[in-house]
Amino acid sequence: MKNASSYVAVFAVGVAACAVGLKTFGDPIALLSGNVPSKRAVLASLDTTPPTLKHFTGDTVVADAAAKVDQAVVTVHTIGKAVPQQTSPFSEDPIFRRFFGGGGGGAQSTPRGAGSGVIISTDGYILTNNHVVENTQTVTVNVGDKGYDAKVIGADPISDIAVVKIDTKGVKLTAAQLGNSDDLRIGDWAIAVGNPLDIGTTVTLGIISAVNRSGLNADGGHALNSVIQTDAAINPGNSGGALANINGQVIGINEAIYSPTGSYVGIGFAIPINSAKKIAAELIRSGRIVRPYLGVSYAPLKAFPAQARAQMGITLDSDNGVIVQQVYPGSPAATAGVKTYDVILEANRMPVTNQDSLNNVIKTLKVGDSLVLKVSRNGTDRILNVTLRERPATFGETPSQQEQAPQQPQMQPFGQP
Image 1 (tube, rainbow, N blue to C red):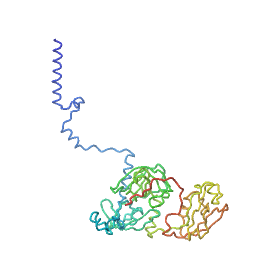
Image 2 (spheres, one colour):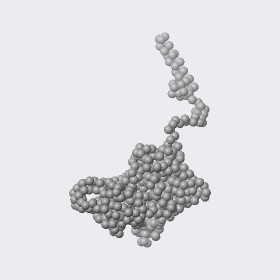
Image 3 (cartoon, rainbow, N blue to C red):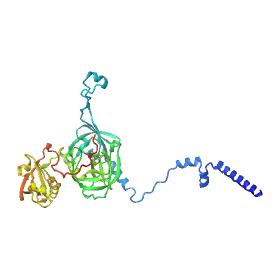
Image 4 (tube, helix red, strand yellow):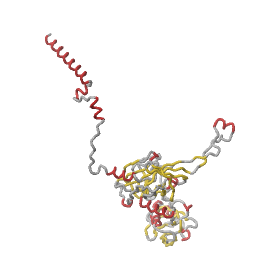
């Protein structure tokens, strides 16, 4: 009994001590941990500014590059040309009109769009995509929080490059530093800056996934030739914005995404800045691009098996060269005697090894220049001299017939209304 009483006493003392502890500290978890904060201490800690974080070498490289590019990227808003609005089939019936409304009566809708642009001069010249500003009646540009009316200086549907100009009233803007897209390597860092989905300027980080990507078509049949591929997150509205390197230099103009949904899935494309600069310079000088053209459509020889080649009278075993599939009437090629099923082997003594080789040679020439073609026709090599003429505005995209491929996810230009 004595022992039992002692145990009870000890237990009672323990309970009393615990009660005191709970009353004093309020939180058994805090009691066990030895951490007993007061309300005042908590409020003081929340009101304390933490010490400045010390960045080590390399920690701020991306942030520094993004800050440099961000100053030169603008938002482009457009109002398109009015188009007839679809009306109800019942709109002209007076009885149905009572229930379904007037139906429009010739009403028109005005499409609106948003994209991006890159400042290339301190006095207001801005580089963007043609598809951002085409078929528009009003273009406005926001530099930071300040808005400007903009004028389209020139636009080129083939390259998808356009230049717009704003009147800065003497205020000097921050122009982008343009890099060298010929120096790009797969795996280099890539920073995309633009206005995705019109939510405001946004910066994303990725790498250069591929260079000189060709053989792809964006919406409307626009061909993407020799473009940069990146996995930096870009979405509709990024069109015309900057793709920059880790030094904050613009190395591309964002143009399209490859997506089954119309939104980012990790595959985006940008026009190399070296190509964009040449187009922009010509647009600023003359407002349009004058291109020489040959006037044929063609496909790579390697796309055709031996049986198909035999049916066309082609005896070549090599896969080098392109097969002429169509010669446009009245074109320079037609005048020079190029025929359907000719295999073009050389252009100005440069081997034509694939579908881009011929275009690359023509790009270096001017209207009136000669293009000497070596072709194989029915097993015999021939030399044909073509005098290039100005490409008609109605000719369309650069003539080429790509290899047939399985159905692919849709290519989406950014910034479409």
